[in-house]
Amino acid sequence: MAQLSTKIKSYCETNGISNVDFTKDVMLQDDSDGNGAYIKEWNLSISQPTDAQLAAQESAANTEEANNTVRSTRRTAYGDIGEQLDEIYKDIDAWKARIKSIKDNNPKS
Image (cartoon, rainbow, N blue to C red; front, side, top):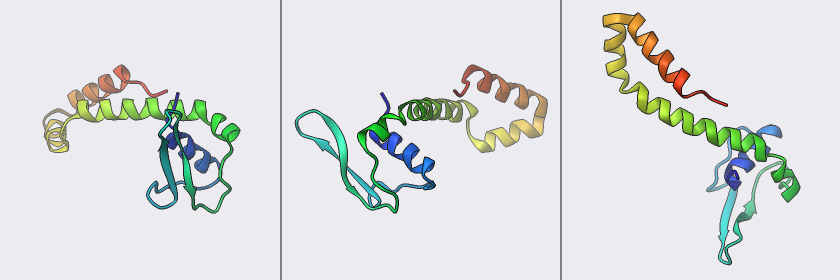
């Protein structure tokens, strides 16, 4: 199940808002009775989503979270940009093969 913040980002993107600041635009709060996070405050120009609208974002949010994990794994595997530039200078074809292998082993959804 995707995090509430990811579903909110997906809902906002669907409605033309590409950047959400969770310290100003939308404030979330964790429920003390164990029911999880909820929207405490909504300060965007679009209407606050209903539970059904957020549930409709579940698939897109799951994909985004999975892709974020892949991006993080790839970033680590790519290594330092300075080392990559040195690798490119020495043998660009070997660098291309290494990057392709990383992407092939860590596909996005």
